[in-house]
Length: 400
Ligand code: PMP
Ligand code: GLU
Image (cartoon, rainbow, N blue to C red; front, top):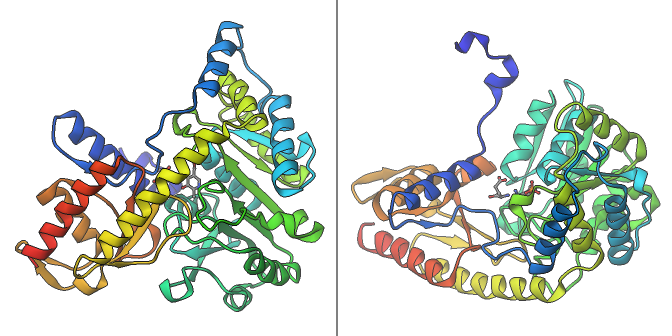
């Protein structure tokens, strides 16, 4: 039946982050004592007031289609949020509500890219950008960064890679998988380069609240009208409000781009789930601040603990991430070593070994464009984090 598959389908790789999470969940369901460091979703529950709004919406019969691009009041709530938090002015016509930020990103790449276009992608990158750019027929052009630069691109690296075929730059701050957070000054030097070229910026701000720098998160669009005009902001409720399963994301940008995304959405998913949109209005207009602050404070404690533990394990190293809820671990020192009877070449081999020998699920770095790394999520309970790190430490100290 393979012969029936399109060239597009043949080119696509499944999401490794979701695959690892599925393996860990399946093993757990079978009663195995697995520690899942794969999940990129907060382990906290969605705040009660948001759930209540969804229940009320259901009881009031909000169970029908909405406009394909989302409820007008929710678009207004998105505008309100960006005005309140970033001082940015958008109209509801410049907003689309999608089935998660991932879907918003998919729509942007589909409407912006032609075959042969290049999209600049700082690397390490979150797995789905790479595949979505290719699905849109464009080429991801990787801007390689390392731990010495804090995994951030410089204006020089950006300028060097811009060609007449460049369509867009993808920015993700706070970053998955590295945890890097760009400062206002850093964004401003990048905006200076972008201003000299006819290109878009796709700014994925989904981890905006999970930022430990003590400084407010800055959207590159807030740095002036010129850069705002070129930016498509992508955001969603999954991370800030622990709402991964609700599937509500959104994008803000030029009305022609939003209109094209809405047309595409009207022929694919139609509207995101109606009662989830209704609850999202409450989340954005009157955010449960205490619940969010409590969650971020807990993430910070876990990050501090995890970084200190990882650095103490021979052969492993990591930067101190400034945002999101991942530690990106460098295992290059272990490459080529025999561990528990097996030669470990890279992060893929190590992740496989962890799963088989000690029932610990981590995401190998290859899916993020960094084969000598693996990613640990700390969106799981403290005791589990301790147990998982104990197992890794034990394996690497006794079998290495
Ligand atoms: N962007 C990044 C960087 C992410 O890590 C995620 C997590 N899945 C998403 C977008 C998509 O989030 P969602 O579709 O759940 O809104
Ligand atoms: N963004 C999360 C992660 O990177 C969730 C999984 C996904 O959507 O890829 O793990």
